[in-house]
Image 1 (cartoon, rainbow, N blue to C red):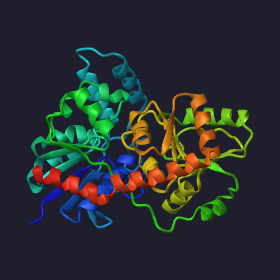
Image 2: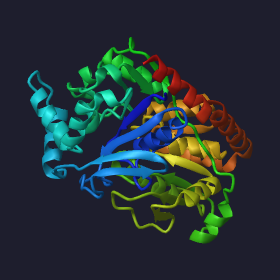
Image 3: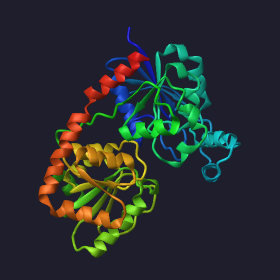
Image 4: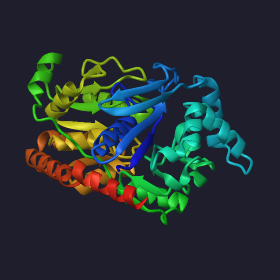
Length: 391
């Protein structure tokens, strides 16, 4: 009889645009070949308001049984932002009450999901919680610590320093990390290296029919371009990217374009060489990445970055923010990209990748090898199965 797994995640579905949610969906679908998999989640799609889109009940998404629960209140953005400023900036011994309120405002506030876990714990052999940051993990994990795994997706960001998270990282039976940098950071921060764990990573599936020319013709792009793929947000460093790119164009004569693929959560400067495409299809994404001179990721905070691995899997070098240990680690281990700290390094890295063909070609080959060796689904599944069977 196959073991029954329950994934607990804040949002779930093909239309959900989020790195951790996409990762959860991919892993759930892959593990369904070996286990009876069910997903416990909310009825929301958009994380800004936590507004219910679906009705409660059972759904099927790519053959995976999905049990949805309604969120009972939308996020109060002003109250949440005000409380965030308070708990991030004022550390004290009596801060826990404010931090619990912060978690409730963080959401998605879904007590019905937590109650379901509590009263149906014996129906499942293992609960796998996705990402430490949300209400569903924080309160759900407390109901079933003895049969749980946590995929923390933790990195150096303000919430990780809240006091309420210290006990959370000691609750699960096993920990799953996506990178060596994440594991080192979490072990140092929470002293939980005694927990069974593994650095699992992700499998990268690059389509066989990638066609850069199809992308160029569709969007009318004739010149060389660099590409950003993901949510366009200040929290992802996009404001700094715009500043650096506009300055680069002012100081260097070229036709280079910056193509932005993703849903905007901030204003995008109006500039003739910045091309915002909005949310694109998977075909467009891969075609656009494959045709780029490089993929740029300015984020200070990443726990893995699928776009970086997808780019390397297409043989396209990367340029990333050197202040993010995870992204810097990808560059060092793969030797397939550059990292920068400040504008001058940003500009010089672009110049090298655009002008030094021998370096570019070597990095392209290195990226292909890095992904094909370290980031296959067979490798990832073997690691998950070992942890689950140990549980």
